[in-house]
Image 1 (cartoon, rainbow, N blue to C red):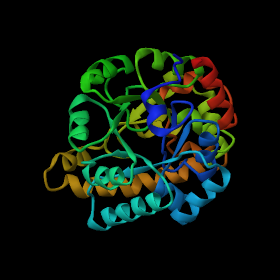
Image 2 (cartoon, rainbow, N blue to C red):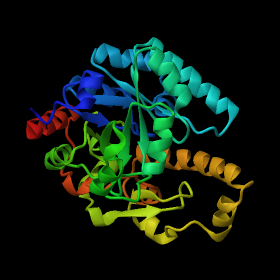
Image 3 (tube, helix red, strand yellow):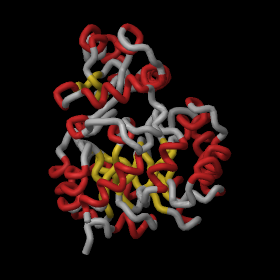
Image 4 (tube, one colour):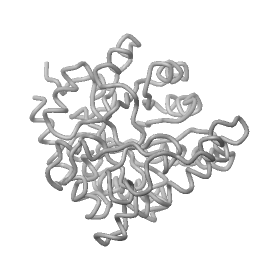
Length: 329
């Protein structure tokens, strides 16, 4: 049996068990379409689609459909930060279902309402987790599989290695996707041999021709080694994996004492997280899309994982999918 024949490929009707993870602000329609067209599956980040690239969600999904008829997915952030935000996510989910999307990735909350809507339409829901307790909560919410975010991931990484996390989740009886540390074809094949049903890549797909991130960001990924990846609390209040830049070194990586105190408070942590979310969305959008070598981009944050060790050039996304598939065969 080929390593490409997994529960993930069978569930989603795809050829290569490779997910292009949803990334704010880097996921644009062209990237999603390119990964899906090559046999993997691209996942739409709706806030990125609308507020970064300026597409109405429905029209953006139709733009992807004009490029490929193969399956695509969508990310649904389900944290109940506000009634307005939750209503917006419900509307986005309905639009995606109406446009034929049948794969959804949830995170940051109880996925039950997403599962109920998606399953009734014959769809599949996977849930981002970093440890077993979150996996068990996701499964209690009815999800069909898990995306296991390990300690080599970009953005909000988990605390465990890929092997340790797989061992912790393997007996739960659902498909598990490896997320973090996969920069080249050998990493991908290794994850499949470990027992994972697939892999989710973020950093590798930023350094692609189709990705809407600025060329400075892409080249920073190509130049970086895994020792250049550090965790900072100063963007979202919790550790975020970014590329070490002179700006990151200058301001440090720890949240200030007032911020830490507010994040611990039962009443204050909610609005503090909201403040961080709004600020980080602006910072990450500015950093990822703005150009100008030197002073401008050195003052921003570039999210990336330790998979940078295996990334040596900016390539078409389809070529990456095909090369990884060949290694797994």
